[in-house]
Image 1 (cartoon, rainbow, N blue to C red):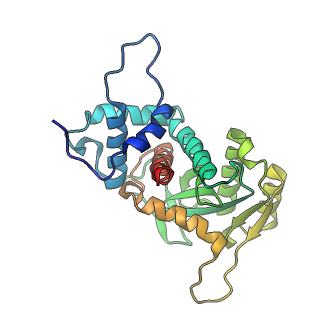
Image 2 (image 1 turned 30 degrees about the vertical axis):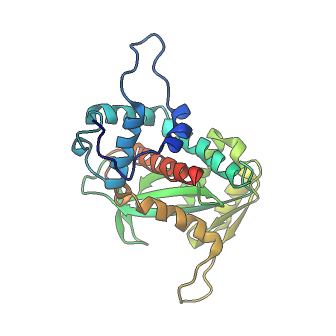
Length: 264
């Protein structure tokens, strides 16, 4: 008997793209009996609805099994690897090089759920008590790197740290970058110098020209990324105790976003 279908379920075309990225079962161990497509469907359902793991519908694999894979892939960096692979595929589909010439950085402050966890703080600029998501994206808004920190961490420090991490992990992505777009929170000679020393790119600060609301095209790429985050209830707040689990949730959400784009 087939189970109920959910809007978050992977289509056959999407699964054909994602399946090769799923880590294989350990060599020499027991044959894998768990349906990995259903594990992924359950994870995406959790991210979209924000439900607790033990509140997953009963027609998915056991919640303990689903969470075990989710956590295991987080520890091994699989979600981030999937994000990078799918991002390259999206860029290639759109006729673009996998190496962007422009990137953008920005942070998003989100409340926590009342459980302080290991990292939290108060962002006085945005009046949010919780955590800060420092993101670096390409010109399409596709995620290159995310660092989750305490809410009161300075943007310039976070931005430089995220760029350094990205450079260490995926230097090839940054080889052709000529400019980094940021807002006024990253303004300053020290940040610009740090970016130049790391990747020999210029920092372009996007300034608003008046008090009235306006859309800044170059800044919009990051706002679009945050818009994708906001479509998934698990990211509406920071529900995780560990910041690395928050980062994993963001990478996992982006894999779902990109899978949809790849089959359109």
